[in-house]
Image 1 (cartoon, protein in one colour):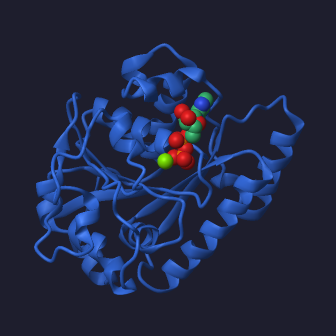
Image 2 (cartoon, protein in one colour):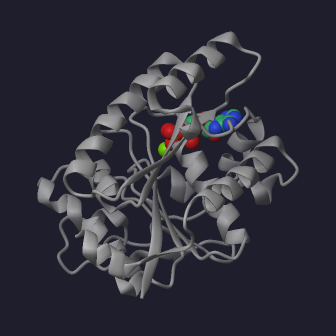
Image 3 (tube, rainbow, N blue to C red):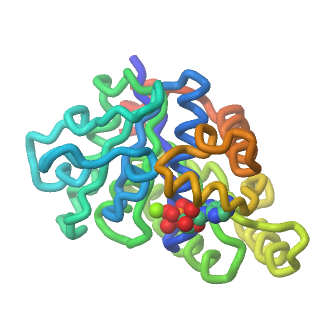
Length: 266
Ligand SMILES: Nc1ncnc2c1ncn2[C@@H]1O[C@H](COP(=O)(O)OP(=O)(O)O)[C@@H](O)[C@H]1O
Ligand SMILES: [Mg+2]
């Protein structure tokens, strides 16, 4: 029996490329035939927007998880316009509060045999340190951390890493840091090189992934509510996410996680 691999895309800093990365990686894996579910945990609703998906009706967003005891995530899944790619949209009115014990509800939903129809779940997370981000850390198998190559973004990574280590020692000992992903980084800019060197020193050079270059087409694709591989398949952004999808897939055990292993852990 298997369940999907659960990937959280997180950084405590806003505007660091989380949503862009979540949406475009999901689209890459879907195009390779993986069945991918994007869960939009940020109440800004950007992942749903970028995938062309809107909340269908009240009671059908991921945030209903907190407060509705009969909630089943499968009822909140919306198909996108592309094969193998689904989304659970966000509730823009959710206020982010709730008892910490609810932080395990998301893991409870996603780590079920009933979710075995998906190969990969991608969690697009909010920057705020709240119940929702805690839920993502407790549910995920791996965390991918996009970061802009400047000091504030690095501070966001340090704050996230504190939460990461807290989660590993409590709710989710199997959680892995899959990689740190420089966004809009340029090799020719001295400050970018210095920030990435600092990140490599702190987290290990092997964890720093090949950067995603700056490409305005990525912003244009989001505005048109399409993944970059469909909006501008020949763009730099499309190539970079294509390569990243391969790199992550080859460095991790895809697509599914044994529920037996999971039982041993919990
Ligand atoms: N590689 C890139 N090149 C150009 N613009 C980008 C790139 N990655 C993200 N952006 C743009 O930067 C902004 C913030 O990205 P976003 O993914 O929404 O960040 P977050 O989810 O962390 O807040 C968006 O307008 C997005 O379109
Ligand atoms: Mg976002």
